[in-house]
Image 1: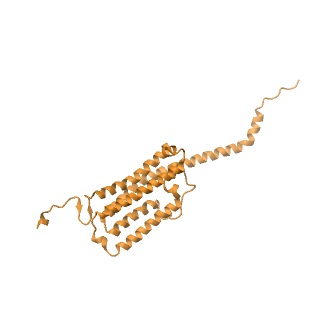
Image 2: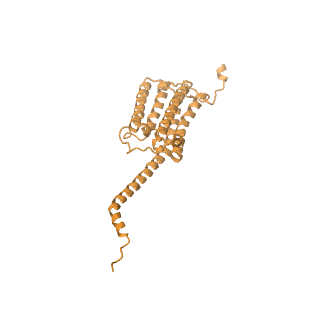
Image 3: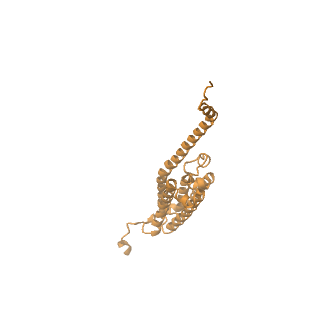
Length: 237
């Protein structure tokens, strides 16, 4: 009888999501913070070379330190995500027999995309080395980049969805949507910015090549011109 008169919270959807849990909002903050962090730091490095200057010009060391910080923040984010799911309700639709096998396949696929991307790009290619002036010789076109663009981001998103399905947590699916949105927004800044870095580098390379070609073609002729510019000797009487 008492239950009939209990007022349900507008912030709790039974079996779906509990918005009153602080752990949920901490996870939201972490998911939003990480791409913001690495984009701000990397763009500042490109424009001002702050990290490289602090490290005495050692740009590779700067890139490695940024890589460690990004990787560590990713581990923290994943941990906070798992803690948030523990405080959220499960739903019977996500506890069907087929859900866990599907989640396992999705998780494995996502991690394959992430790990093979890291292998193909290397540390500096994965962790924004181009913002430090460490450019790749050519575009990576092999697996997994021949399957999808930005496989690291979408592989990571697949892993978030997989964990939510494995534990039967609809709130995890909501957080996974947030991950996708945040990555999509980050790409709107990263892709044109990175493309511009390589475009400028290509222009500089072409200008240097043209200058070198001009010097090489000008070399033999320069001696001729120099001789022609000598002061002519006075005619003999």
